[in-house]
Structure formats: structure tokens, C-alpha cells
Length: 101
Image (tube, rainbow, N blue to C red; front, side, top):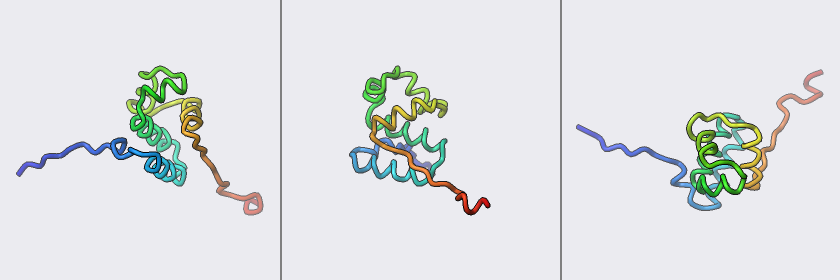
């Protein structure tokens, strides 16, 4: 018995502003730097690498390589993408000053 398997690509499901916002909400809950790069790569792919690269002033191939090939990207590139998406990472301290005493 053989199975016909198609690769599932989340970027294909990010087809509206609401779906992208919901996806980014999940990212911000996780607070994982590796996921940040992966999620932003998915969003960039969904919107269009050419559009994102033009808007943030980065070569399309460099953007593609950073987000989808090696998964490593600079903090500056992440910040530019977040600014473009008008998204903001928020953090909470894991240990309060009082708990550290």
C-alpha cells in the first residue's frame, strides 16, 4: 500500500491578516528565538519574499537564505521584519527582583 503525501506548508494557510496575526500571537507566547526566525520566515513567504525584501531594503536572496535555508538571521533583520509587520515582541521577567532576594 502506498500513500500519496503532500508536504504541508503553513505559509499556504497564512492567507489573511487575521491568520497572520494569530500565527504571530502563537510566536509571542512561545518566546523562543529559533521559532521567531522560523515563524517570520513563514510570514515572509506567505506575504511574498520579494515584497518583504523590498520593504525592508534587503536583497531577496539574502532574506530567503536567512529565513528559509539556514534558519540563522541577524537581530537587525528580525527587527526590520517585525517593524514592517507592526508587530512587537513583549517579554516578562522570569524572576522578579523580590524573588531574587
